[in-house]
Image (cartoon, rainbow, N blue to C red):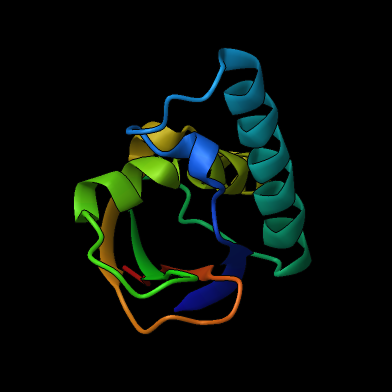
Amino acid sequence: MQRVELPWPPKELSPNSRAHWRKRHAAAKMMRRSAHILGMEAKLRAPAEGDIVIHLTLHPPVKRGHDRDNGLARCKSLLDGIADALRVNDKRFKPTAEFADTVDGGCVVLEIMNP
């Protein structure tokens, strides 16, 4: 199993956000770039073919009820950046997500499961 810790996606990336498209675009671009760099630094590797099983553990910055679907959708730019780092099409990803304890500032722990 390979693991990398990624930053918590900003509120503009939530599907429930009413942010202006320009703010949403800037946030998505920043998160994608951050995930790409962190993925490269972690030297992540993917199998040559087949599905890539990814598990996301979401550590929100605040303790309140969170929607799992919204949490996964909020991580779309992070998954795109990891796909860039792995040099694969993100359609190969089979992601799952779960919420865990809060941490200061929040984070997303991404694990690539070995086949």
